[in-house]
Image (cartoon, rainbow, N blue to C red; front, side, top):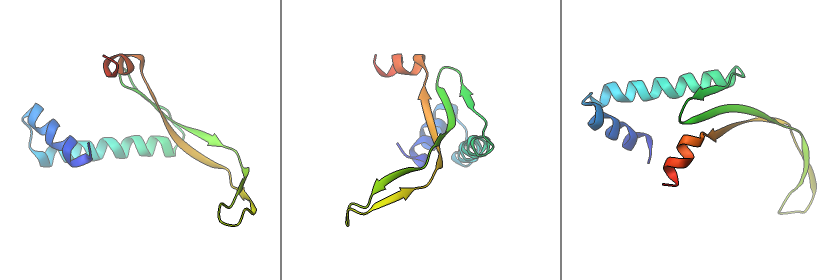
Amino acid sequence: MNKTELVNVVAAETQLSKKDVDAVVSATLKAITDALKEGDKVQLIGFGNFEVKAAPAREGRNPKTGETITIPASKKPVFSASKVLKEQVNG
């Protein structure tokens, strides 16, 4: 499911216009992104948690040449599904 399909489903479920639902979905995604940029954790009870984890610098290999390279440290957004979501997905 992509964003357009999500907007269509929510609009049909809520009887709101697609334009209004698109604005809400976009604002929600922006709020989650902004919180993660600031290092905050986003908890959606019954759905899951979004947070940022630090990935340390490490050595890797260039697959083309086999040369050893240094992969710089970075921050990675991660999602952990809640127990409720896992149970619903698994039936």
